[in-house]
Image: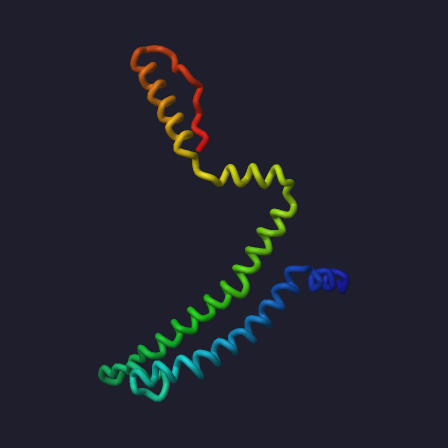
Length: 152
């Protein structure tokens, strides 16, 4: 019973998830601080309110609609998305790409670069010529002159 629990806890996914939760909680505190200490007062000053939550408030009967609070949540979301992308996603993707390219032989790298390039004008013209020749041959009832298969 303890052996199974030990294997579960020491599994890489569980450790990674635990680290992500702890970092996420700390990161949330930083983003909340930035939103509440910088953006809320700036936007509150624009709308002449003491905080963003009280800015752009509309009262309809007994209901109070707080557009400023929604704006604050949107700003907070965008800040989190920007930081996650530029601090985590972009560097990790770059590292993965670098690590993946290190595993390839130089010949494989060159072949991959060739595959990524679009066809040249000459290649396109050759393909068009061959297709037109095949269409003319078909219209005349002859077998196609080439076994041309477009490269791209």
